[in-house]
Image: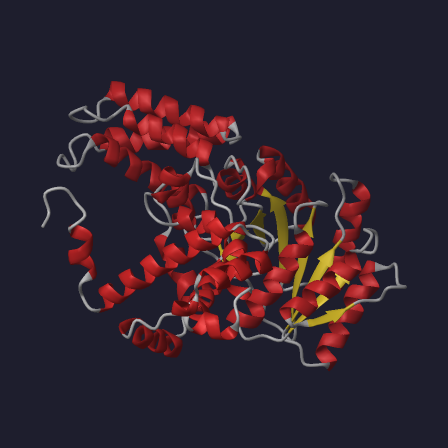
Length: 444
């Protein structure tokens, strides 16, 4: 995420390394590099100029302040603060008050509206304990109604659809009546998109909004389209005056222009950020956390929050007892694997850990590796999974044949599992750190 922008900003900050203090000359050089980085990330030049002017003024004003802080670090702090402010300053919640609350979803075709609708339904159901009704109002795109139905089933929420009705306004109105009669807390209205902004689409979304008077209107934007996304956001806001923005596809080749420009341009907060296709990859947008990730500082708070969502205290205590007795088995390993998988894609998670995004940016971290390990474990008998010591060569050959892997892959996994198991056991006994230190030159 934002790798190119991060690299260029990092270069601008490094220009200050080795200097004794911030001066008008080195500040000007650094600010010039920052402006180039922002424009290269598809941030509008006017916004980039205003942003860097503020950074320059603050940097010049800090000339005699915090003399113990390195110039590069001080510039990073100034840029971070201004970036947070540019993206809205603080997170803004979604308004789903009402009987029922009504959330209208708008955006261009291909922006990820329907997938986001499913993610939002899951979020409101699981995080807010709400009874949610997903509504299919895209009467044009082939399979759109079916997609909403599938998402509703996956998330475990209600779905409202009228497959023969081609009037999205009446479908939306009928959905709210249905929700009221069946005690739903919130209705999510997924609307049709177009390949570009056109009058017909604008008239339709205006008519729907006027008829149902939603408590919240969200505009979904593909963050990979950069400044084009911001221009589209402005066009929609001029017509329907929405309440907030949703950034999707932040796991792709995102340059950063949309995230950094949309709040400034339309004056509406970014409320959610979405990565990937999995339905649990939706986060409330926090400007400070996003700014830290753009600057390569990671986002450890979000990482911990995701981990806590998957944490089961009772299971953790059981697992701890097994590790202490050196009884950690393949069933336990598979359970931990699934917990990590539910947190999101691995490369995105690694990028949240401070310092790790730079170290792993050129590595191919593929979630499919989980599938390889899982196939090996699932090819074992229940008795073998519970008792790893049973795995002799003949059993390994049978497992390799069963999962379609080479015997060398099975052997490698078994070796890694055994090493991990021993290390976990040593750590539980308080010997792990001592053992690891012995591996360093000069340590005994």
